[in-house]
Length: 233
Image 1 (tube, rainbow, N blue to C red):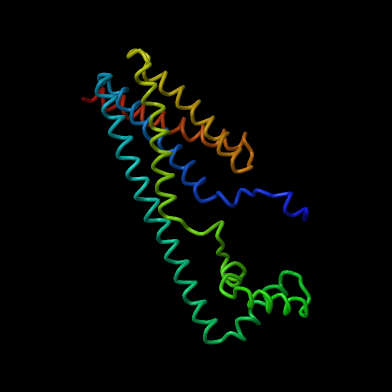
Image 2: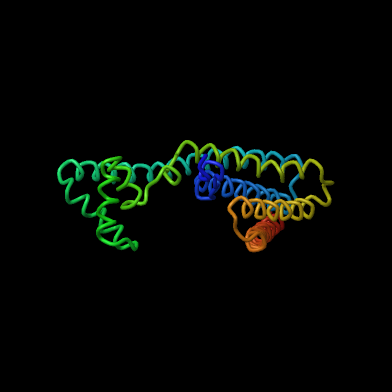
């Protein structure tokens, strides 16, 4: 048996679509919901009101994230389909030119002209559109836009992230709600940053510091605004 069959490789790029949506959704769920909870609680609202506001933020945020991801990624998918349609037409109307174009791409990547011509010819015979999509347009199965997948991943991740500060509200004494939710949310964000970095093969320390910093800033700003509004009202 070939060693290529017994030594599979798993690359992070294959999961970049759903991973981006999931990390973004969970991060936004924690930050936006926790910030709203802290802002409302800082305005001297009752715990019941804080919880209602948090649940409303979770539901509205999840729907918003799903819709936003679907529309955004659908636009990318439409652009990809339009480019593929153009390439199909070009291959049908001027196949020889398209094969030479593919050859020049391989020459620029380091192959000599004879080998590049042979590779372009073989790939054109096998699947000309796939070859041009991958090597000319940069479109592959691993990175192709998937709107429904992105929408579900984003909404589910947002809901999971938002549920964490909401559960903290239930477990916090009213007098310490702002402090407990803030600290717990920063811990959740740090864990999310580490998990996302691990899944993507990136630096865990850098990702953890990045998400924690911006989360702390959002919490501080909304707490300050909530206190000011509470004092004014």
